Image 1 (tube, rainbow, N blue to C red):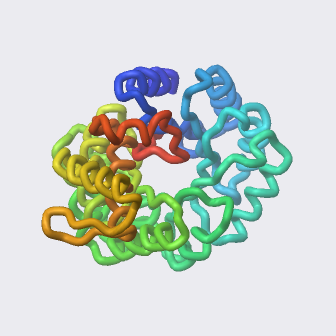
Image 2: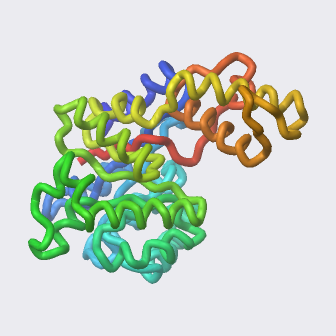
Length: 309
C-alpha cells in the first residue's frame, strides 16, 4: 500500500498531474479474523499519506459483519483524507442509503461513493443506482458476476478474451456504462487478471474504452498502470485535431466554423474539448495554446484505479 502511494507521487511528478487513484482494500485484502486490525492499518496509512495523495478505501459489503467497523475505523478517523469510499456488492438504492447513514456519523460525511455492480439483479438496477446523487462511479465486478450465475457462465468468461465475447458479460458491461453516461457518472471497467501479459491488457483496456464506453479501469498491479493510461489516451493526431478545432472556435467566439471542409459548432466543440480533457487526465502533452485551459488540473476521478489487495 505504501509503495503504491509512493508510485503515485512519483508518477504525479512525472506527468504533472495525478493519473491514478490508490484504493486500500479491506474486503479481499483483510485476513479472516483480522478485519479490525487491517482496517486500523488502512486508516493509519491514509492519515500518513501526503496531502496531495489520492487515496481511497474499499470497505466490506453492507451486509457483512465488518462493514460498520470499517466505516467507524477508517471513515471515522481518516474520512477527511479519502477521495472516495468504494463499496462492493451493491444490490439496490437501499444499500446506498444504508452507507450514507453510516457515513453521516463520521468525518467522511461528504465523501463520494463508488460502487461495485456484481450480480444480475444489480445490473438490472444500474440506472437507479447511477441516478443516486451520492454515487460518483459504477464499477463492474467481473468474477463475482460470473460466479453469481451458478455455473451457467463458463470460467473462461473471466479471462481477457471471454469477458469481451460472452453475451451476458458484455450485456452487463454495456448496461453499466450506459447507466453512468445517462447520469453523468464514471463507468469503471473491471480488472484483467493476466497482469503479466501487457499486450493483452492493453488490448482489453482499448476495447473497454473504445467499444464499451468505459472511461476508467481497475488495475491490480503497478505494471498495469501505464498500459491502461496508453489505451485510454487519445492519439496524438486526435489531440492535435481537437486543439486546432477548439483554438479556431475560441477565435470565432464559439460560433460555427469550417474546418477541413466540415462544419463544426457547439455540439462538436464539446466532443473535442473532452478529447483534450482525456489527454490531460492521461498525462498527454497538450499543444501550448491549449495547456493554459487545463492548469492546474483537478479531476474528481482519474482514469486508473490501483487496488491494493
